[in-house]
Length: 91
Image (tube, rainbow, N blue to C red; front, top):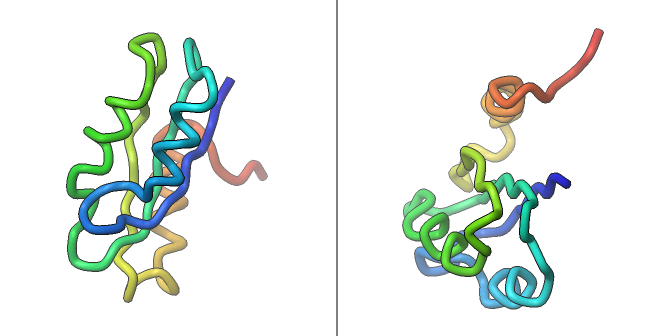
């Protein structure tokens, strides 16, 4: 099973609600694809912190971070990120 996990970067990590969500549900054998919006911190320690909440059997895919001022123009970057994982528009 595949999960896209979206969140804002709050003070260089994921919000506490995301930690609670990851701790509450069993992600054993699941694939998690993180994406976030951020100010100037980029992904910071978000991915390392998510890894701590997931079981070893969970697969964590390549994340993407979108800088807050670039949100309106990020569609192409997001499409490329998705296409790189085999997702995207089908003609």
